Length: 485
Picture 1 (tube, rainbow, N blue to C red):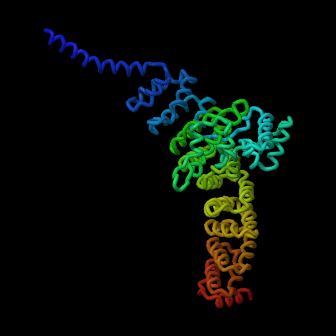
Picture 2: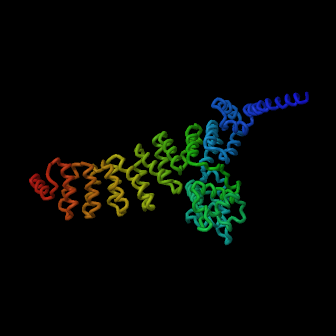
Picture 3: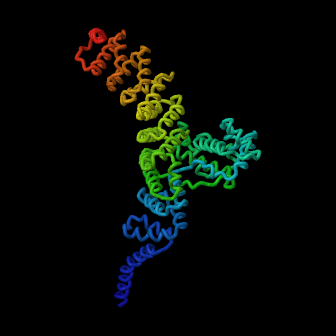
């Protein structure tokens, strides 16, 4: 009897356990606690229908839901698909608070003028530390500031509030500090309460034997985030509003966050997009796709600001993609080209010369013929050999502007320079352009002392005249003389 009762109770426990576990899951789904609901939302066991029901509940508790997303996003153990669901939930709120979190996911650490609560007090602190002998964050900043920024801060410290232009200057300088690998030092920050992780990132070694520090190889987006935390720690919340910067979980999720911002209707989302600078390939592709959907004038203004900035985060691929995007609009594009070329008056290294400069010149070549001719002839006639070479390379691919008289004159000037490589480049352009008015340039090359140049000139003349004369400069001269007579 005892044995049968024991068997009965054991069987009951075994049967009831799954039911109680299931009841627990149901309680989770029925809960109104956002922390519980979000866990249910991103659970791999949740069906699309269950997620829809859960989302409706989450949308009734905005403040608590946003706080829990901030806590949950990027935690260890969460897969990209689960983080992507958190971004999806966030986008449904379409509010300034949700925009701020999405910016945090994108790692947007840059300083905005509105975040500075008191320019006078900030300037006073910076000027005082800058003049002191002892190391400090303020002294580190003061050392690298240009004189016009120091003057603006000195005036602000005396009670003369900076105007819009000066604020723009100072914000730009602070954002350059965020890109510095040398801002942090233990001496300068010894009296500042710095987050432990930030300290480790700036002082830790990746390879102790080789002396490779993490700070030297830290991605720019991470560097900006950590320097922003240093700036906030030094200035305090009374002077600088803290910014939500969530863990950066890769390019693919950054692209998702960008798409979420693009889908929002609130003004804050649009403003955030217009201020954002993508870094990775996938985020750049997503961003350029978003810009393509914006009105032409807005694109032009944004791309001008973006490409003319001093931000180190602007990758070569991003510059190339957005310069190419400008080719679809002529609204102020000629002015932007001139600014771009002026901004990059001196080549910025091999990567710039090989990738970015040709794209700027491609943009110039895509303008209406007269505008394109004016800009490109200026580049060819100028003293900068790098600009001239890049312009000739672009014209070989897009010779349409050769119709411009000024550009033909500039190309004639290149031929008169007697540089063989450049002369052959010009003849190749004329061959592609098939512009009748370029015939005198080819004729000029028939008298070149270089056989290769003279023969290439005959190729150009055959195309322009449709005459089946052999590749013989002497025969072409005789034919031209007969035609003239």
